[in-house]
Image 1 (cartoon, rainbow, N blue to C red):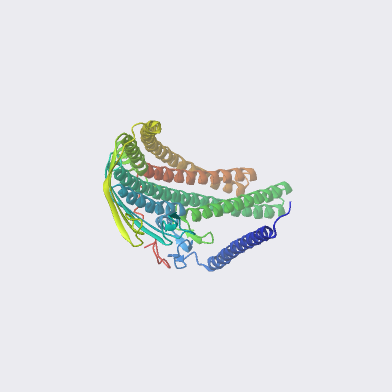
Image 2 (image 1 turned 135 degrees about the horizontal axis):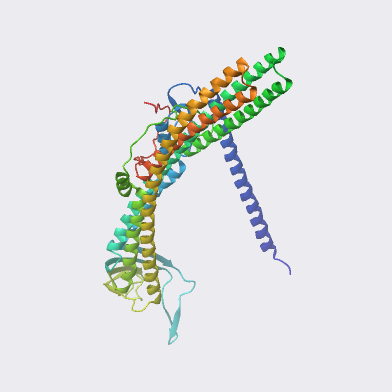
Length: 497
């Protein structure tokens, strides 16, 4: 089979064009990624020069849409939350959905307003038809044919579509607002949770640093005693091994701390090159909780519970609209036509006009798909009601679980505080006994390990209480902030004020 030269040329040109297009796309992607890398290097250098000890928090770079800011300085929890509410990508995506909801409201108004369509046409046939009568040719039609048609249709009655459609659109808009509030609450919760995790790992790192310092001191003491013959090579080797183990643990905790900071930056939506020091500390601030009041607040304030109830109402309107298919639809119409040749006298080669006005009735008397659609919408309605009841039960569980968590953490704090005091005294006695020769090296190591574990358990209890209190605030719907549009100019902001 021989391919025509023209067909081969077209195929070759298409292949060349395809390769060129793919090449340009790859080049564009490569350029974008190189630019991203250059921006990352610039931010990294700024972060390395930043002073994290200053009291104010600096949000670097003039804010641009889609850009992550570089933050430096000291960061407290409220400032972290404010930044997350501005830059968190998940929250930004939820806020953008408001425009979609507004579009649905506008679209629902279409059942009330008229539709206007315009059709224009020009036609020139290759040959005009003709016929002969008694040897005389008579032309039927003309070379140039023009037409302009305007159709106006105004709905008058459509059961279900009129009220249910508009009400459903407004319910969807309210549902979108509740979803944004839920996204904001989740952002606040995730930010506070990440912040508290950094605080705990920071304390763990400090404890491990102290362990390294104590191990180094024990090693120096073992060397001194070795000189005077009061310590063996085994004691010296054990001190070296302990120091090495403590340093390994310190490096591990340092890595965990940096990982936690990176996660905090990710949740906040700021640059990974940011360099901050956390200003807050883990503290025990006991809070009295009334479960009855907490449940009341949760059932009233939880945006996700409101959203689920709105889903029920929205699905009810969907059922009403589906049932509307049983009823006729009535609309008025108007059609106006300008054409050449004249639309009502086809033999005249000049512009003419004709119009039609009337009423139109559409009534589907039998439609099996209509019955199936109604059954589907009713089933969805029952599912939404079940989901709402399940969500309400989840709210009650969240409140009860958070209160139990606070109570258990409070008891743990009191117990760990006493344990910490005892472990500290035990370490002091072991160190004194070691200096006086009444305690061996193993006793000091054990006492030091017990003291470190007691400190870590105490800080863990403090974090558990803060997390339980945070969960209670989330469960009762009190992590709700008014989310405004992103500011156009954010250069240097002292969030600590």
